[in-house]
Image 1: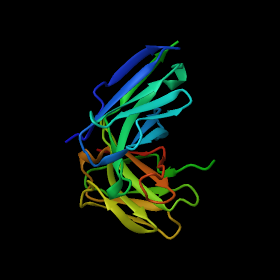
Image 2: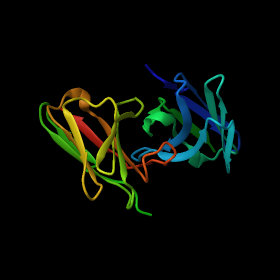
Image 3: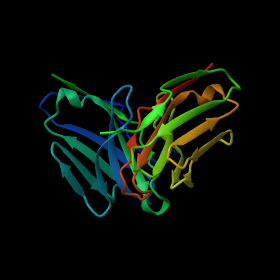
Length: 113
Length: 114
C-alpha cells in the first residue's frame, strides 16, 4: 500500500528551465511534507518542507506547492542547474504519530547542460 | 559540520548469519531513526529511539532488534539473515522527536546477503 506516490520515475530538463516534480498521497492524516534530494552513495538530504496549514513554501530556487483537497504536492526548481541532477524523494509525516517519514518511490531528475 | 556516521559502509554476509549496523548521530541529537531501502524501492521506516527509549516502530522484522545507548549512538542487530534483507540501511538523527524536527540522514550501510 503505497501511501506516497511519485508517478514519474524520471524527468529530464534543460539547464535554466523549470523542473516540476510531482507527488500524491492517500493518507489524510499526513500534515507535514518534505522533499529530500539524494546523490549516489549518499544519504537523503533535506531540501524543503511544507506544513498542511500552508499551500506554498519558497526557498531560493525551490518552491513546494501543496493542494490538500487533491492530496497533491509539487516541487518546482527554477532555474534548473546540472548540479540539481539527483533522485528526489517526496516524504510525509502525520503529526500524531511522531516523525516517522513515509517516502515516495523517488524521481530521477537529470538536468542537461 | 559533523554529520551522521554509519558503520560499516558495506557489509557482506551469508544467509542465516547475524549483522550489526552502527549509527552515530550528530552531536546533541537525541533521536535516531532507522530506514531500509530495498533495490529500486523507497526507504521504509523500521524503528526510532528518543532519549534511549523506543519511540516508534514500523515494519521491522522480529529477527531485527535495535537499541540506543547512553551516548545516543544506536545499533541495529539483524539475525538469521535472509536474501531479502539485502538493502541499504539508513540511519537518521534529529534534535527532538517531533514532526517538525528535521531528520539528517547518514550515508547508509549497504548490506548484501549471499
